[in-house]
Length: 432
Image 1 (tube, helix red, strand yellow):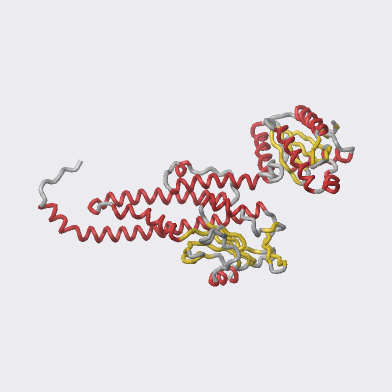
Image 2 (cartoon, helix red, strand yellow):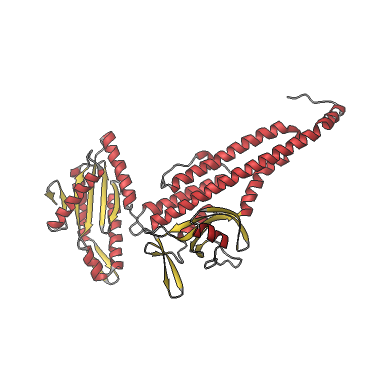
């Protein structure tokens, strides 16, 4: 503990001799620290916008297959992703806006087609034009770029624009991600202001606190950046650093929002929207994990591929809406059957993949035979119609062979069942 100095004489001599250099040095250090910190924040914000832009494009690629395109119908221009018309579909950008508080806009050429930005009346600024400078740089120049002073609807934005390409790699539109510059500047000011108000005479303490604070803050931002980078790269099961989630400031809140966004993305990317089952991409990943467990620990498993018999006839006779009802009803039955046994995957069209964990062939045969009986007794109502369906399954026991070979073997048994009368299970040269 420091000894308290008695009297004021030495204090004032010290103040006279040191106040000016201390003030100047403190101002220089504060100014330098503020500039460096602001630059770091801006750089991290830029990286965050780039990663979020990549995440949004990845979401559109995963949810809607195909390339960007535009079609004109009379006076209306439609912006397409594959066969899906994007005009009026704000689901994805609103979800990201809700989770990250970052505004997003999709342009067809220089016209806003989708946006989360609203005017003073609360209306989306759809149909408005991009700034001429941005159109020249990003669309015509085919080059992504940052802008710190672009005014949209009377609000100045810190933003990132990137081109969107058609199937022939020509630029067909742009994507914007950004936050109001005032929010970014306020975040920087709030981070720097504690440094300014600290006592000048305790400069070493100020420096230590600043260094410690800056390191922790930049470290948290870096962890958020790494997490966003991995999620935007397709790793939707990446674990987020718990130290950031334990923070009680805006960065901790942002981290919790990112976790929720990751879970929402996982549902969009890994789940079949119609049936609620795992989609093919997710199913393949899970199957490889089961296969790896067999190779490393000899945990048995079985794989079955099932196909709805004469499903095309259902679609042709009653329509695709009826076909969707049939798919959803059967998927619900398959999912209930697999609960506690493994998992079901919509493999494609009317095909389903079933993976039985920790189960040998004879047990899996009994399970599928029971399920086939349930399907035979199932009556599916569509409007005033009652529809009966059956399914054919091919079943194999898992092995150390490549996953592709196991799936191929199950598929061959499925088609053997199709060619031998349908409505049955084929396994190890035996029909059930």
